[in-house]
Amino acid sequence: MAPTSVAPEAFTRAVAGLRAAAPREEILLEEIAAPQRLAPWGFALSATVLRDGDEVASGRLILLHDPDGHDAWQGNLRLVTLITAELESDMAGDPLLPAVAWTWLSDGLDQHAAAYTAIGGTITQTTSTRFGELAGPAPTADLEIRASWTPTSDDLGAHLQGWCTMLASTAGLPPPGVTSLNNRQRADAN
Image 1 (cartoon, rainbow, N blue to C red):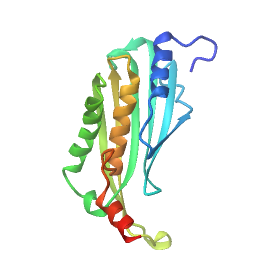
Image 2 (cartoon, helix red, strand yellow):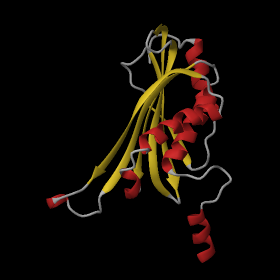
Image 3 (tube, rainbow, N blue to C red):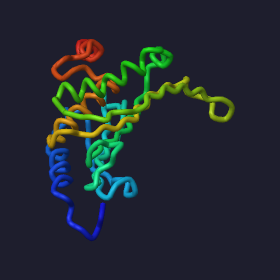
Image 4 (tube, one colour):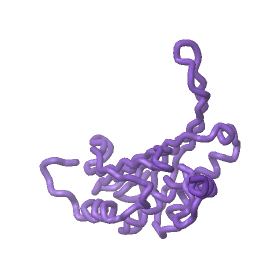
C-alpha cells in the first residue's frame, strides 16, 4: 500500500465490501499483508477451511488496485487467488477434475451475482510419494487453483461470497444446510 498517500475511494469501498461479507462458519478468514509490488494499493485475506475440525483447504484472496488501470485487467481493480486442498487419492488422476475445479470459481461468482471480466487461471493436480529417509505416510494428492479476475461491480462482498463458495467446493463441503452422510453416520454412531 502507498504509505504516504490517502487510499483512493474505489479501493476503500472495495476493501469495505470484502470486510463486510461473512463466510460460512467452516471458513476462517484473516487479514494478512498484501504483496506490495503488484499494484500501488493492495489488501489480502487468508482462509482456512475446516471439515470436522480438520483443515482441508486454504487460500488467499488478494485485491489489487491501480488507479491508472491495466489493459490486461480491463479495469483498475483485480482479484487474485491461490487455493490449495488435499485430494482423496482416487480423485488425483481424474482427467475431468481440472475442468470441474475451474467451474467452481465461475459458478461461485455467478451464484452470488459477482459481475466480472478478464478471468483466467490454472488448475494443478499433484501426487507425492515419499521415499528413503522421507518414507512414511501414504502418497498424498493436492489440488491448486490459481486465478484472477476483474470485478465489474462495486459489490466486492459478492465476490468474497463467490470465492468462499469456491473454497467450500474445493474442500468438499456440502452446500449450506445439507448434512454429509458421513457426518450423519458418525452422529448416529455416538
